[in-house]
Length: 126
Length: 262
Image (cartoon, rainbow over all chains, first blue to last red; front, side, top):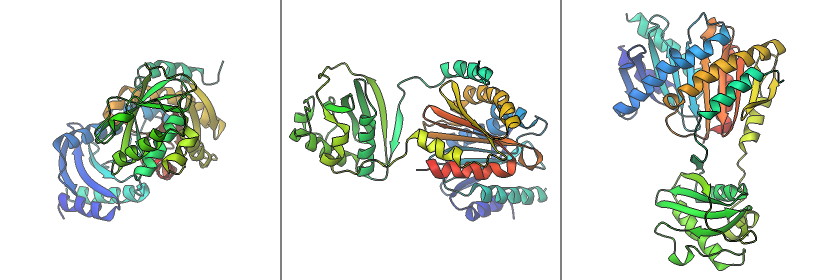
């Protein structure tokens, strides 16, 4: 399966997930997207900025002392009453991450489990 | 001096650059009745004379409210509201215009989904004894009294549900730490880390949360490699920061979402 198919599969497997994307955190560039409806470029820019903030930027840096600061942030979720945006760092390519937009009642533990498995399969494709 | 003096000092500085006072909020409800009940709750929570402005898809509705009483509908009013209602004093619940206003509001709220609300100082003076007490509005407007929990009740329910054998939390109200729970050593460290985290959180809030929200939650975790991660929640002017093992954080975040999801 190519990356797009992996993202499509994850979106289908996680209940309430409307968008899954793979992005480069450093450049904040979205590399691949699977979405129920084509998102606006502005929306994707905002999502990748939030991912960078939460996994590498000010949010990650300011949270890191609470766990000793050695390890980078791996998982982040930004939640409101209307959605949950999940960001998951790729273990094999730490500058890249999975971004998911989910319904507020999405099972986050299941989404993270699916996300990690998706990232492993993407990494295995080289 | 408070055990959390450093955190409180930091909060005092950070709050200065937080969202401006009087900035709008959003009321949400499924259906016109629920939204009208939410408007009644807003009236019930307004003691000082205020112009409550509710933004609907069809336009803004402005109400004069004081002492938990609805005093008048103010202009300008959107189409669908009879001109005769605009500016008319509502002396008490027997005034026929009260019922008429309720019907008009219900009609405007059909299909709205959410309503923006903002409060500003009231320039008109209707007299302190003028107005329909909020507690009488549900009957005359035929809506159930709001069963929506207050932000304080939501936060309390959330914190009470945490397993404090492993999770530690600080409850923050304004600039003060108003409560704490969990292992003492973790709580102590959390006080130090919270000041650092909140500095980063507020400095980039608009990047993380572009749209105004009734409640926000932010989870940052090192994954399985770290001992602890952070979860910070905000609901209106209340907030709490939680430190917990990464394996528990997602469950904690899910429990928060169940309480605040629309």
